[in-house]
Image (cartoon, rainbow, N blue to C red; front, side, top):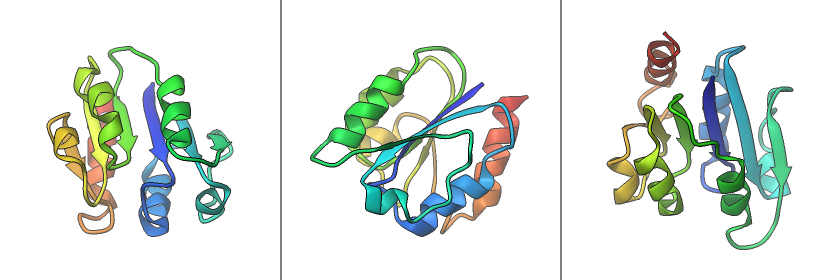
Length: 131
């Protein structure tokens, strides 16, 4: 099962939509958190757990709470450095989706931006880790 954590406050609507479009139909656990405004910019898949929050770092806290330590693949859709320790210490493969990832996140695994790199790179990574 691929774990997908999406910080809707940290990515633009086109990037969020590209992530959703690239996700496979099954085999993923998606948790997204952010402000109601950011969440409203995307049609989230029915299987996603969507958490509307407001306030500084609230989305980060909810996503950190939703994170499950395991050796399965992890996708972090956020450039926020707050996720760097979580991503760097994750025992499985990690994909960071961001247009401007924090320097510590760049060392956590593969980094892609579905807007500039296209969704093919994202889909290829997902296909490879899904085996």
